[in-house]
Length: 490
Image (cartoon, rainbow, N blue to C red; front, side, top):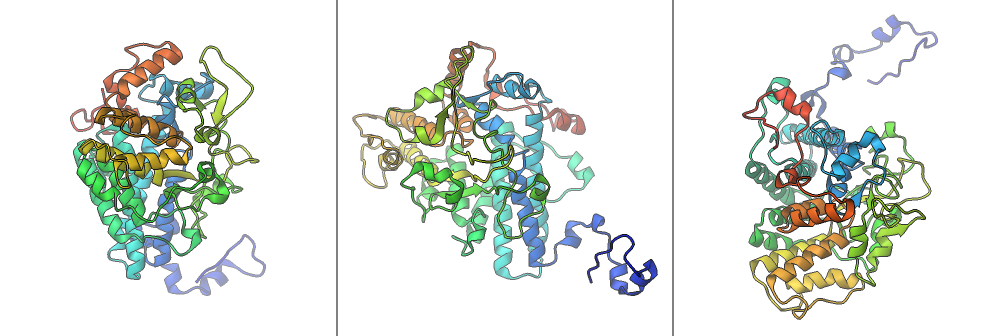
């Protein structure tokens, strides 16, 4: 029974309202006291729970804002033009001067565990739920994929992190430890392997676009294997990521009107024209969304400006340049800024913090370049046909209007490795991949040291190997107060 009770309902007294309700209604637990055990009953309940996991990815604590500071600004792709912006905390990330209390470190860490907690709430209850098996498989697969996705970010950003795979009480959470990186990766692999068997290949309802699929799970699993340098496993899973193609027009990937396309394996959806307060509740038509930093966070912002380095990295005639960057009439001799800004995600006209461009976090072009890398790391081959390392690399280059690479250009494994690394930077520019690629690339530290010196005249010890991981937020260190099981990063 549902009642909408307002103050001074004409002609109704409290006695009347109570007498009209069943004993069942009176004995129901208050909404404020709901737990996962009492809330999750129907397929609709689980749908709301899963939608809440996606909502966590759209938060300003994660991919709605804060993540790009740790993944793009940290790298040599973008920088902070206004050093005093946000009280200087963004500039700290850019120049490797952040403290353990930097709010972006705290936001991404806390925002990620909100996503994990919501995923665990679904996973704790879904197996025993009296809902259709098809719904059960989908909800479980989505929750597993999203938990793995977030843990993949966490382990690469912070190293050892607490591995939480069930809903915890407060006392249990206080006893969490920082699990070894190998344990975290093992759980990520397990989650993705299972998710790939549960999720559908496609969704028949267009409003479901943006939900994880079997291709999402297999593609991310391949990326995880590449990061772990498990080359045969990576090549094996990546070759089975089927049903996707490169779009002919690179720029078309990033327009709101073309969010549904054949190249994106997984994207974080945003919807324009909705207030932030609605962002926590709306998902009735199954389209994940949040307020997106239109023209601010991802494009045209003083806090995410393309560096001189990346502007110079584009080859002449590369079609991706005009699709990714644009110019404005300003210059800054101190930072050597060229006057470019990120164009990929602009959705004008719109108010600050309101845009409809989805954010692709896993594309088929990424899969092709990962496959090229995995094959080359197993054994260099000069062959250039379909299914070869050169073949995968050249699919991406030719879409960009560039000449195909051959063994004459890249005569050995090392030169091919460097070419893939350089191609990934341009193809995936401003999509939160660059910092992670630098970390796993053998020359990444030297590249960043050279960037800091050339761009800002900063030299060692600004950047040392220990700074390849971010600090654990000081608030977490203080709460656990356990230097043995929950130490700070060096």
